[in-house]
Structure formats: C-alpha cells, structure tokens
Image 1 (cartoon, rainbow, N blue to C red):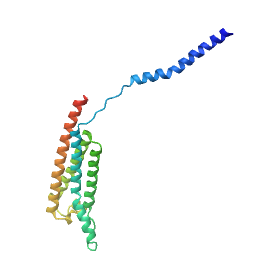
Image 2: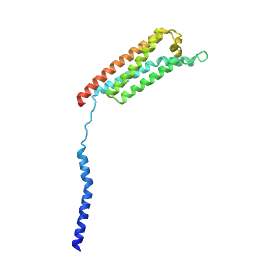
Image 3: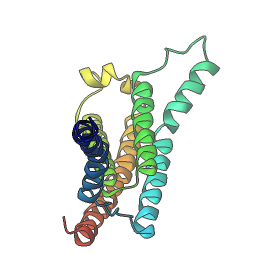
Image 4: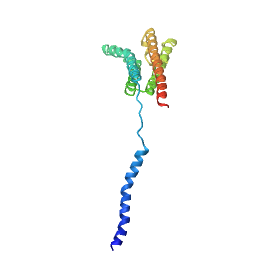
Length: 194
C-alpha cells in the first residue's frame, strides 16, 4: 500500500511542481523577451525654439484681434446709432482664437511635428489675409463679399494696410516655423536613425 501511495503520489507531486513552476518560467521568458526601450529627449535649444514660436504666434494672434476689440467697444459706446457689430469682427476673433489654440498646442507638445503644424496653420492664415487684401484692393464697395463682411463701412486704405501688415507678420511666422521644423526633423533623424 505504501508503494501504491508512493507511486500514486509521485505523479501528483511532479504535476504540482510542474504546474507551480510554469508561470514563473513563462514570466521569466516574457521579461527576457522584452528589454527596456531607450527614449529620446529633445535638445533644450530646440525646446526653447518651440516656446519662442508659441509666444510669437500668441503675440500675432493678440495683435490680430485688436481691431475687433475696438469695433466691439465702439459699438457699446454708441448703442443708439450703431449699425451693429460687423461680421469681419467675428471673423477676426475666430481666427485669433484658433491661432492662440495653436500657440498653446506647440508649447504643450514641443516637437518638430507640432512646429510643422503651426507653420501650416500660419500659412493658411497668411493665405486668408492675402485673399481679403486682394478683394479689398481689386473690388468695388458693392462687391458681394465686401458687403457681406461689412468691409464697406471701413475705409479701404485702412483695411488694406491692416491686411498687408498681418499678411507680412503671418508670412514671416510661417517661414521661421517651417525652417525650424525642417531643421529639427533633420536633427531628429540623425540622432535616432529613423
């Protein structure tokens, strides 16, 4: 009976030992198969470039909404004879808020891809200012777009100068952001080998 107990108990002990050892072996195999991955940290000078770009983008955005603020203030100061808030005012506010959002984006996620996205966004804004400048210079006061945006209520010279100034600033911002993004991406590829 002892031999039977021994023969009956041996497989159970072996099976228990094998069952108990299986997770440990598999866990060791998993830990050996997945070595820790090395990370990549950007150069502090590149991060400073992203922060400066974000500050410049925010500055241009705040400068762009200055006429809208004056228009809203003038509306509330002369409520009796005011024709209302012009549509171009809301357009400037929307564009300024979008530009501020991109400035916050590049500061929170400083990377070459974020800088490139800001460059593309500034390029779109520059194109918008160029189109408005062309419409103001080449069209008459009864043009449909001029009438819809209420730009006929603003002196043409004042509007064209403002659009040209904002076009110049956003174009410069686009150039410097694109240049920084290309150089940053080139450095990233050299350091990571990707």
